Every structure is written in structure tokens, then in C-alpha cells.
Image 1 (tube, rainbow, N blue to C red):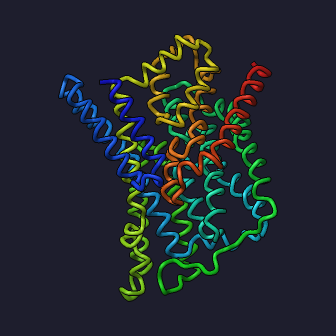
Image 2 (cartoon, rainbow, N blue to C red):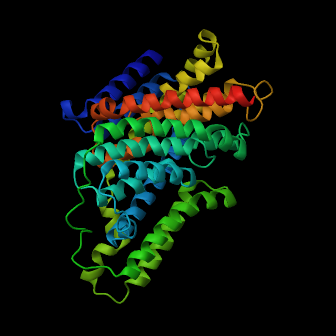
Length: 427
């Protein structure tokens, strides 16, 4: 059974990577892969009750991510419909594309430490559509946004789900992870930025000819500012909401979405129906990319079978027995997270290593936070940020692997070098 599961997962992964040569949408490949994997698990897994409980657990985890993704994408669409991003785009005056690249990289890096990397990616890619007209340019920017979002999330306890897992589990503390991983994460971003600067040098920023928010009416400056501040404020408030209530992030985003819906209704209550039709949250829901969300569901459910059948745990233990060195094992786990979800990999590692041997804020846990958080940037479907970017900008798997993957890998290993040198200097 385990061999069959691995073979089907590899085939499903390959079909996602070969989406354009095959002419098969990646969402279809992900759903078929998930369906086959769960079918084989159900027919050969033994206890039907246990399998049913595992499926319920996986659906619950997947639904939380999907609800969050839908909420964040809808909020961005509402802000966009009101020309809210003009608040930012009107203040960016640079005409050099390399200057814009560095600006976007650093804004994404720090924003990702406050929000999470998924939300940051959605916001920044939506912003790039307002600043850059050429799709080829936006693809490179999307790649840097993915790298920057993952790097920025790694050094903050609320920026990346794996860092949050280690934080909640007591393996790391807030100040220690920020001090320990910040420089490594910065190196992970700066190296690709430097290299990509040479690729894009000499190019000028080509802005869209006109802002088109999909409706014939013009929003007022007050409406633009209000909806922009409301949208960004809700996204920033989600981690705060989670910290206060200990409820999962999707509950905060849905709560905020309800508030935004209410404010929108009040704001446009005196307008004619045809004037406010495209400004409503209902209209925004119609514009979000459902194929991206369905792909997300399929890939997460597919990876869940590898977790429930303990394939990932066995892989982690095999690495421990075969390799032995913690630094090499964690580096390999980071690279592996570019292929499979980093959450079950980190969960397996948390179960493998005893906190009496590896106390909080030790080398293992901080290095794990960095590698698991940034290794996913090497492939486009290696992180939630990458999957979102793939759907929003229609990025080809092999284009990313060829143009961005190598840069991300160099940044990943640069950060590893910086962290190890820093750790040896101060410990």
C-alpha cells in the first residue's frame, strides 16, 4: 500500500508540474491524486473508523486554510474594486524596475512577519498588477514575493505556520527566534535580490495605461482610503485576534470579512443598484480564483495521506538513522519541504526530538524554523505562498523552477551559512 501511495503521489505531482504540456489543469490533477490516495488508504488501511477520523481531521485542517484563503482574497478584491491600492501606487514614483524590485522585496519581507506569508503574497501580487503592465515582469516580481514572504515569515512566531507550531509547542520563544533567525532570513532574500537585479537591469517600469477596477463608476478618495485601511487593518488584526482569543486565523478573517461587508453596505446604501453592483462583497466573491482554491484543497488532502500513513514520519526517522548530523538532516527537511507540505514534516520532527535533549531556543529548533520556513521557496508548489502566486499570476511550474528556483536555493543556502556562523560566534 505504501509503495502505491508514493507512486501515485509522485505521478500526481508530475502531472501538476507538467500542467501545460499535458493540457490538464493542475486542480484536476490534484483532486484526482487526492481521490486515488484516499481510496487506496481506505481499501487497505484496515480500521475504517480510524481512516474516517483521519479524513475528518484532514478536511478540518484543509478547510481552515481554504476559508482563510477565500477570506483574504475576497478582502483584496473589495479593496481593489474601490481602487484602494491607488493609495500606495500613487506614492511609488520610481521608473527603474530594479529599484521597485528591492522596494517590493523588503516591504514583503517585513509585512510577512506581521501578517502571514500567504496573506502577504496575495496582497503584494494584487498590488503588482496595479504597478506593472508586462506579465513577464510580474512573474519575476511574483517569484521575489514568494521568496520574501517565506523568508519574512520564518523569523517571526506569527509569520509562518511552522514557526507558529514551534512557538506554540514551546520549542522557541519570541525574542530568541527573532534574534536568531533574522539575519539568516535577510540573507535568504538579499542573495536572490542581488542576482535578479542583474537579470532585470536596464528595464523601465511599464505601468498599466489605466486603472480598471471592473466598473464604470469612480470611487471617491474617501471610499478608496476607507476600504484600503479597513482591508489592511483586518488582515493585520488577524494575528492579534488569534493571540487574544486563541481561535484559528480563519475565524478572525471571517469575522473581519463580516465587518467589511457591513461597512460596504452602509457606505453605498444611497447609491443605485447598478452603481454599487461591482463594489459589493458579493461581486468580489465572484471574482476570486476558485480553481486556485480547489487546487489548494486537492494538494493538501493528497499530502495528508502521506502524514496519516506515517510515510513522512518514517522518512524523518530514516534520515536520523542514516545521516545522524542534525544540521544536515534539518537542511534536507527544508529542501524536502519544497516537494511536500512543511507542516507534517515539522510535526514529525517535533515528535522525534526530545526537548530535554534539545531545550527551547536550541540550535535544532531555530534552524528548523528557518529551513522549514524558507526551503519551500525552491519550488512553486512548495509553500502556501507559492501555490497562491501560481494561481494568481498563472505561473508555470517549470518557468519558476528555471528562473526562480535556483535563486531561491542560493538564498536558502546563504541563510544556512549565515545562521551557522552566527550560532557558532554567539554560542
